[in-house]
Amino acid sequence: MPANAAELVQRCRNAYESGKTKSISFREKQLKQLLKMYQENESDFIASLASDLRKSKNEAYLSEFNIVTADVINTLHYLKEWTSPEKVQKGLANILDDVLLYKDPYGVVLVIGAWNYPIQLCLLPVTGAIAAGNCVIIKPSEVSTATSNLIAELIPKYLDQDCYPVYTGGVEETTELLKHRFDYIFYTGSTAVGKLVRAAANEYLTPVTLELGGKSPVFIDGTANIDITVKRVLWGKFINAGQTCIAPDYVLCSKQVQDLFVEKAKHVLREWYGDDPKNSPDFCRIISDKHFQRLKTLLKSGTLAIGGDDDPSERYLSPTILINVSQDDPIMKEEIFGPILPVVTVESAYEAIGFINSRPKPLSLYLFSSDKKVRELFLTQTHSGSVCVNDTLMQYVVDSLPFGGVGMSGMGSYHGKYTFDTFSFKKSVLVKNFNPLGESLGSARYPPLTDKKMAALKFLLAKRYGIGLSCLPHLLIFGLGVASAFAFKYVAKVRKIVTYLKLFFVLIFKC
Image (cartoon, rainbow, N blue to C red; front, side, top):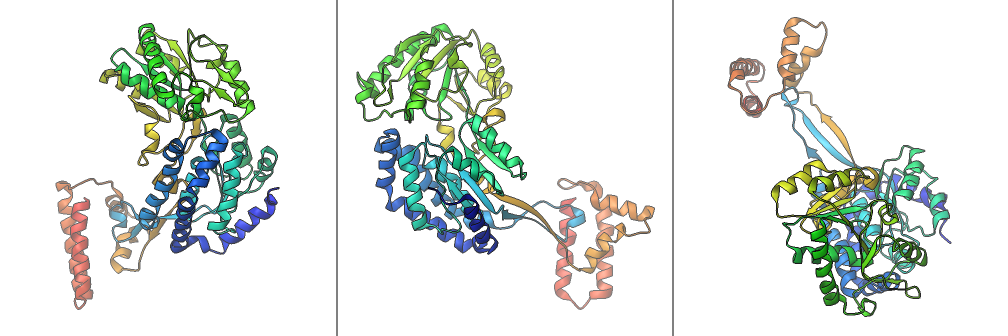
């Protein structure tokens, strides 16, 4: 049984209010411990993925383990830079002030992971949440039982138990957990459950990131290199047996391209998985009987071109391609999330764009074309969380790109610094001093308001970009006034002379 939800949240709240997570050295120590946990338990993590999804060692490393370890290393490298107050642009009115953004933690945050990539989708957000100074309640998916149990076992051994507890359980336990107040909620999973999470968050106006899914389309035109295109589409579709939120969900192409695609796919799949993919060590299994049966019903759509074999005892469903699929078929009504790839024929790029835009905005969109005009057409006339041209999935591993959805495919983003930003509240800070010149610059705001003061305020508040020669006479008069006033009152203070000279030149270049 999981810990009492109310007690767990309060324990985290007490830990956060103690201030311990705000220390950069504390965050750094916890991140190093997280990295140590990965390094010391790599074989156990890989074994848990084999148990849950029959992932091979190589796939487990590339699609999960390498991603989370690299993310911690990257976060540790940039931690001090990311957490430092950020100086932002300032105008003439605030030329003597410090204008800053402080990166504050939200407080106690909840991270709810998903079962299809149960390590990275659960723990990748946790890295950024720790770096940002939050306390984190970690909720792994109960569907991926082996990995969930391993996370629950290892996290308390490496991380502060008051600040980063693990909460296990199913729908009932998660529902109870969501009744409590959090300062931020990060959820990865289905759109249906995402709506429930959003509704629960609304009770306390809690901000959320929802990493959901949807039907990510692929468009292939006649200019694409079909040999390379087939390999890249099939790899993106059949890795993890299609149980990937950004997997190619369906293909849009002409009848001619469809025939070439299917013929080439037969050779590629035989090369990758042999005559019987069931015996291949590189092909995963469906996570549960429930998901397996759902996928079986989707095979009734269209015409079977490749695959369609199954073994319920192993939850095995072979790599499958369907043709003659109608947009009204059941398989086109929901995210597939399995190793079935339907092909829908269209006559042109314009028809494909209309098809895509008539449906909810996808998490990702894939375009295979050598025609730059076609690429630009898709980039400007469609909406999706991300676009990858002439490949699949690879946009996900570029941590300098934010990853997230739009509309029904989600809200908010993460990866790399974007994860830190997601779990940080940017606090605006203006620091003014008691410098006589600063007070003189701002004195025009005080009553009584005269035309002369209003003219001064307009001058100070005007937007200026680059060097403007038209304002140099005004600045010269201003500078001479500052210099004479300074000479009269502060002639003995040499250091301040330098300060005011610097100010004079800054004013010129700000103008």
